[in-house]
Length: 314
Image (tube, rainbow, N blue to C red; front, side, top):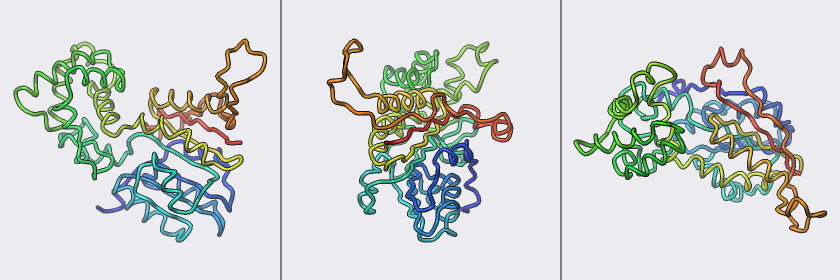
């Protein structure tokens, strides 16, 4: 792969860097390294003793980011892994606390624009959608192997598509004739399951189902939900975690978990004093999420649904 092919505009870049409040001698983790956009700006602000640890499970991203961050030499450590293993990764590097963590969730522009990766419904390609190609399971395994109910469940829950039941029914009917192996085949099946008048308005009819299958395959929501507490625990005093989400399911998880870490008390509201003993881990910096400016949306359409939430550890 030619490194210049990995194109991805970092969303809410200035806002994220500002909220990280980077210290020149600090240690920072980019848990979704991608093309290295956020990491590059972090590294620019680090002094001789500063350090950046980049994590990504995508082989192409690792290659591209390594090249982009090369000028910063020994300040940068790149690990091919999932950020859900952040504690183990940091332990292996001899790091017990960090000053900041950034996550830019979802699928990268490169992954969407590289048809062979199978993330896009705009071109015909094998049904893959793996963020880590070391995994044996692909999107095709879900489409052809899940029961009709489980397909309905993930399309309803992760795609939030009101036609989930009919889409699942059409997928099962189609695969009885022959396996569904390409993005083009799946797109046509989805179109057939949605009324013509609905398809005529709004976004692409396959968008929500593709999102649902991708989330299920890569365990995206489970990984996020199970990792936030750990990441907050790994922050040093006044350390911050910045998380950029791209759809309501992710944003809801971040919002809920940040609030719970700010106020973990489980005592009944009528108790005069707290007796559960659960102490606050810090404070939510962004009472409302930071959203992209009109200028950024005009420059990068994919930034439109992005939201940044920030938590500070105490």
